[in-house]
Length: 466
Image (cartoon, rainbow, N blue to C red; front, side):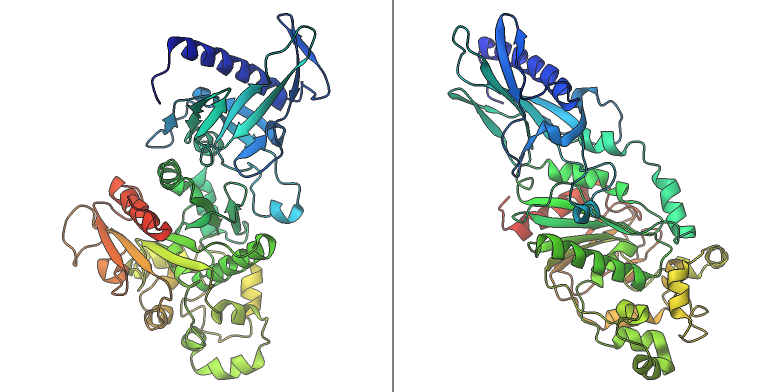
């Protein structure tokens, strides 16, 4: 922020205090735009700001908003703020009124940063009511604001909304429930901000026994980046990780199609998948024909293909087309050829605890009786390197530019390395445009080296010079 005269700093402090008072009352619906309020001998009529458009929002669209400085939980590694005009808040958004759009927004609402700004019309004359507006600005869209004849930087807190809305999520409990009892929960494509057709979507897909909150530092660091924040919008995909790999991939495919029906074709989307989530992502950008079907069904493939209708769950799961609206993928610690841990005796015992939902088991009644014994219908068993799915995937080209981020636990022993779950021979792809080894275990998305590589790839994808 440029150095301001003391008189300006004092005026901005007063404006910030007034903004906080008005915002707190306006969001609580104590103020009504049609009424006039008096203070210190002046009359004011406060309205909810300009009509909604990307980056500018009436505060009436919020259920509540805590001043960002009052968010105390330490959840993210870094805390990103910028000094300037206005009051950064951690907002709780009202859900969209469109029932179709509600499908893509959690009960917690969007995770969009907002800075409240109070502005006035020209100085009031004696006996005249002065007009004032309280408006929410998204600092990923707007970095400067005009007050009178002077342009000031907009204050921002990119981290507080993420922390305030996610600190109390018990991701371990949810992840375990989704793994052991996958019939209890359902998949969901989640928008973190109002959809903007002019921004490139980044879809983050978590891995086995995990939850979307794992991406908090990735979102926090990348969304605050000055070169990226105006180009991208973040989305998440949650799925119960006890589901079969191919079934989860089908659900992601159908969720993306449903969003496209609502908002139109996305702009050159980027998918980032961690661990098993990378397999789901990969299966969005391949054209398998019948190759996966044939490897899974074995000797019965032709007979079953003729017998089952086109809309049968098995066909929707194993026969599909690539998504033409995905432009790039990034794979982090992905077992492209499986993980030997799936064949360990303790894992075999654990697999027996997994309870598939009836929607899956009933649909597969007509399939080969030994399909479950071959380890295809649970995600954990399906990660075995002996699963024919991996042989099929190895033979099907990935149709978009793609990149690998792989952990070696800091040992520097690649190509003989492992992240503790996936060995290098499984996570490496000869076809990758780039491959970066980071000194981390299976959580290879966490270290700063991984964040820097994600940033580099996203700048490349958007055509931005660093």
